[in-house]
Image 1 (cartoon, rainbow, N blue to C red):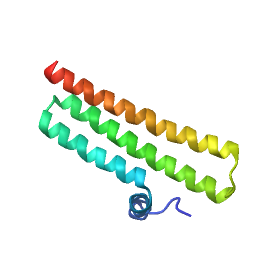
Image 2 (cartoon, rainbow, N blue to C red):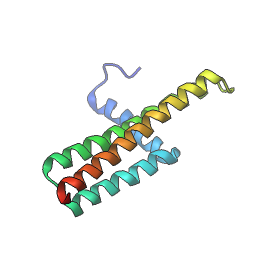
Image 3 (cartoon, rainbow, N blue to C red):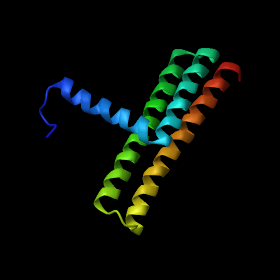
Length: 118
């Protein structure tokens, strides 16, 4: 059980989850590349600090949603390996959440550009 363990152990579990997602989930790797692109965007555009914060929060939200989506998919597949419409719906909804956050991230980036040069 992971509860009530020292912080360094709990941190190790979290880092193991990140490593596993990186190794096994193409979507997480893709979103991570976009996160790196967001950093390059910020360095090139050099917007006001508030935009750095907003873009950073959006990047974190997208990556966190991707991890939650991955966790849900793995848990659902483990508990019910056969196709089931309700499990498919749950997985689709989680993927939709990632899509919405990704679109919101793009919106924030466009607003950052507009505020700089608009």
